[in-house]
Image (cartoon, rainbow, N blue to C red; front, side):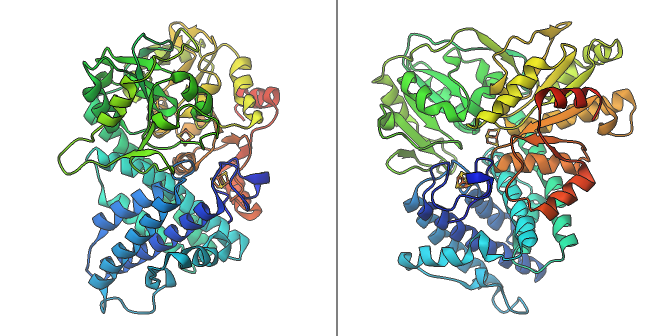
Length: 547
Ligand code: SF4
Ligand code: SF4
């Protein structure tokens, strides 16, 4: 196996024996083979469109969902991945049949390979994985693109679940994925990566439209961290439709609902806040789940990533459920909705009813809900605070959390930043500092949490609004610094979005991506002044000086 798609990759070069995330070699290989088939579908769909056979919507839907399942901590289940590979081949065959005879020239092998012999899958996977591209820089640019597309696909899939789909997004994903089978010049590959940033902005905007259209604009909310006396269900991930249906189905049952990890921002939405049995948030970010799930005592629902391997000695294996693209061997999976119907969470609810209430692991509240609409409602106050000098600088500390000890950097930065700075955040990174008492500036909290990682879109909207209000030419001319923690592929999509918006001088940590070769890094440094996070005090001093 060879996988280097996340920040925790072995030795910051690549996992070659077993993933640091717990992914087995066979699983990594099956994911590679699935992606190979998706490239074939993308190529056939692209060529089909050129020949007048338009399958963008169907192919886009299939490819985005399948790419999503290959993201870190989504799918550890070989049997499920074998099914995906078979489904991908069936889909590819249907696309191929439609374009047969209409597409000129030879096709890449990914469009032509078919096998229903499962025994062949592992061997084939070894020949078509990441290392099949020998040139380090070509590999780097292709993988940067594929990894960014995975993140974009996750957001596109969430938007599609809520009924917002855009063919131009699907078309870009298909064309970009197909481009990784072609011999493009370095300039063209860099151009494609930059266009992925544009597509990422558009996809996050579509998801914002889907989420706020369905559930209202996030509002400033105090989220309870303690527990109630009823048994509960802990819901994690990003899928707000699952959240909606779970809240409806648990209403009046005597079972409470709590959010975990990336689902925390669901507490900020008006459509969910109205339920008394949505009790608040339990525990920390994704990598704390082994401990948090033990003490929670109740049923657990994983709607997207991040699920992490279950320890051999555990008490929760029988009370954790997966749904959507998440899959883990031996766990009960809640099936997808049939057309027009809701998902059926009765098994999760029945399980919760048999459980003890959660054990309290902390008390108090935290405040969030500062997505673009809410911050713009406070715009006058914020602008006034900047003009009066009460706020000297905004530090965007969005992104991910992770296990590595060097992520304490972000906690230290939050603690040591001057008191006249405001931290803008989104994603799991906030768990490094959102329970610290960092105070407020004239009633404006010093940590403004916009929501999930896709809500980084909100941070971009806020920055663009500030640019307009202050009449500066570019976001880079504002008193804003970017100090971003990354972990998995959605964070790469967000990073590409920031680059597309022309943001310069981003600090990225705790390490730079292993999939960026020295040559590609040079391109990023020269064009965008990207730099690694470093010493806390030195970084703060540099950011405060606008560097
Ligand atoms: S997802 Fe990350 S930790 Fe897991 S195998 Fe890939 S690089 Fe390694
Ligand atoms: S913030 Fe990062 S780790 Fe958390 S869900 Fe988003 S991409 Fe994954």
